[in-house]
Amino acid sequence: MNTGFIGAGKVGFSMGKYLTERGEHVTGYYSRSAHSSKEAAEFTDTRQYLSLRDLVGDSDALFLTVPDGVIGSVWEQLKTLPIQNKRIIHCSGAMSSAVFSDIGRYHAYGYSIHPLLAVNDKYHSYQDLAGAFFTVEGDGRYLQELKAMLEGFGNTVETIQARDKVRYHAAAAMASNLYVGLVGLCEDLLGGCGFSPENAHKALAPLILGNTENIVRYGTAQALTGPIERNDTATVQKHLENLPQEYREVYRILSKQVLKVAKKKHPGRDYTMMEGEF
Image (cartoon, rainbow, N blue to C red; front, side, top):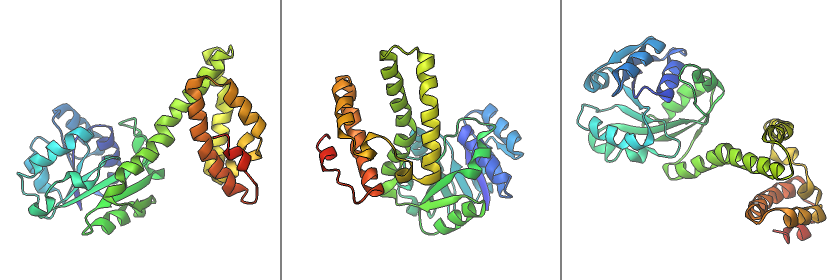
């Protein structure tokens, strides 16, 4: 399969390099910025295209590695070109293949392929893709072929439905981006106890690292510790009494989720009193 890239940002660089290093044939890159496409082509030892039509002609599959807000407009351009039997693929986490409106009329096939990974560097993130979990979604014609390609690289791949893409992306955002917000909230609380910003960060680091390692290694239930897991209602009550009002609701909402995990860990334990706190 000959694969071309439209867009030469971090994801384009990373996916292109990842494919070429695993023996897939990447034709090259087209971008609004000639400098970017030249740079990506050099990095992946492929070709720079100055014409979108030429890239389409040379490629069986086209990765649209452009910002989410631009995918629709790029698709409108592709509709005017000979895309029959082409696989049209984007890498958005939140958008589905439905963004390729009326693709059946053009006898092409639409897909989304998303690595569950923060791609933050053009030149090095491709190395992290080896350990990434991928999701694929789209037309049944080539869906299993694309999944098998990624699995052949050693990646774990889950096929999902278009209707679930936004919910899937929300889960990823909460585990990644919103987690940063939670840590920031905890650092603020320590700041209110007299900690310097540096010491607040330093104090939480072992908890963050240790807990994350335990979750990854043992799963959420076995990693869980603390007053909710112990059914220590008195301590939870004191927490709620002493938290600032704006943080109290965050504590309650997250505690409800923690309680679900605690029940899985201790199915015979009576958490009725604890439930009453939330």
